Amino acid sequence: MRGLRAAVVMAALLGPMTLPGCCCRTDPASSAVEEVAQAPAEVTLIYAASFDSGGGCHRDDHTGCDLYRAQLDLGAGEVRTSERLTSVADTAEWFPSLDPSGTLVLYEQRAARRGQIAVADLDAGTTEVLFPGRYPDFDHPGERFVYSTRDRELRVVDYTREGGF
Image (tube, rainbow, N blue to C red; front, side):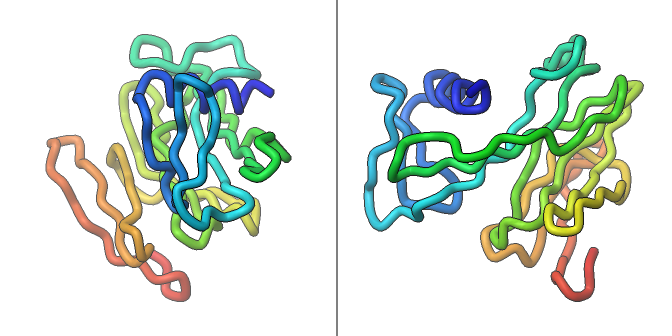
């Protein structure tokens, strides 16, 4: 599947790395996932790509950049499911960050050279634009996230699953 190839390409570009939220590493030389400790049986990978659109997914042409979710079965070494999560015309949806519970994805939605922070609730199937900003990232406990403003200042937002943003 294309999603798995994208993960292997990312690993090849970045070199050996630890996958977020699990105890495993990718090995770009063999494109294999090796267990380092007790790794979960499945891992969710959220990534940006332009598989199903005519536009690009890079700084000079971001019109086709959508978010995808792949469920990786580490034991079998295969992709169980792969699906497109976002698709807004002429808008980049990129720089995703999955919360530790695996239910929320923060990402940048960029159109007309303006970035804004959005959140997708994977369980409810909803998305919401929160405010202007770029490059969001959850902290490990999922209680806060950080993002960059248009003025390149870092901001921290406290978050609770019950109370929201």
